[in-house]
Image (cartoon, rainbow, N blue to C red; front, side, top):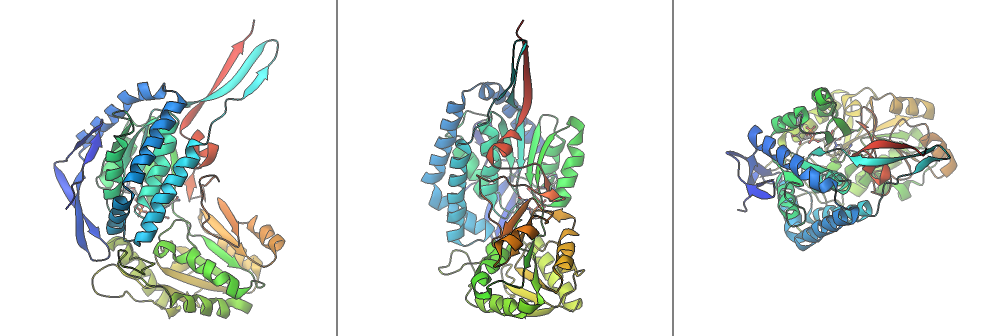
Length: 469
Ligand code: NAD
């Protein structure tokens, strides 16, 4: 079994304790992850602070060269990383490759993004401009659904803008991120990138740590709120990418056969474990049954299983906690009068497998409609009045993404503009890309990622105001 280590100040090390990381397809141990102590966190933060002084003052070209060297190290180890990602996360091997390729693509997009330093006033008296200064030490805390992509999405913008980093992956999927930490040492000076695995407690210590200037967090809304509270003491800068309960509104004029496949993947990609997956689908009564049947038929061609097996396109739910949550939501849907057109019960046997499940006849106030399921179970809610559907969609507390589906683009766009969400899509969903800003409205987040807007969040804007005489 491979060894997994922390990286602190350019060196790998063990922790006193370890914890087992399970393969969710079999519930067998993939590896032991080091359980970092508070003392190790303190040393990682101190190393990052010490490295910041030199890294902050390097030329942008030098930082970009290091980032490109890191991308090269990922490329050289792509197959091993993809396999490890599948073993710990459960996603099919092809999807693990896709996640790593996305990482490389995103890194490329980030290094081609620059922050400008515009001159605001240049007259006889004054020269006034602003510039972006790095913040210092950035803590990154990541979830288990796309661990490598989310880690790169924090690491690269942070170091590119001159910060140093302490990264903490989810305890469910720390292994591939620990390997990224080791690879980063080939590319960055000691202390610039530190990676620690541990439990939720380690995350809490990070959010309270006075030596961390900013936290970039991706995970649940509940944890995001806890981080905001405990980060208040040193007024930590925060980027919070939190939970979503994205809705798709399917209008009466859609071409049903043309949209079924897109709707299916919008909801079930990564077995529904995507923050911006469609988690509730509002379908006009005229086409409701046709859409439901189309989704059920499409699901019959979908193979769910061990991600290392040929032909498998959907993996298990990633961990027992989430699996139990999905099972409980399925039971609550049945109690609330929901009719399962497929799935509805766990598969049984080893592994956290819950089949693709489509539920109809639920009222809008059912738990499965109101709560984020983060798993392969989708409620379809029938509507006749689109204003009512929009009101239901916008009544939720979250606002990550949303979509409208119609043959009439102008009609769909008019409705999409009224969605109270950070992203509003038309005839697509989950189209998240590094050259387009991404962030949640309301309780789905704070701040933006991607593009120059996202890079700027890793900096403090400083106004430079010079009297000419
Ligand atoms: P989670 O909030 O339970 O855990 C996320 C990370 O936070 C883990 O590394 C965990 O160890 C750490 N953590 C837990 N308690 C902490 C605390 N008190 N202080 C600091 N850190 C703490 O979330 P999860 O179950 O890993 O991920 C699923 C959730 O993430 C879903 O709600 C999903 O929608 C959301 N998510 C959001 C996005 C986005 O970009 N908006 C992307 C992916 C996932």
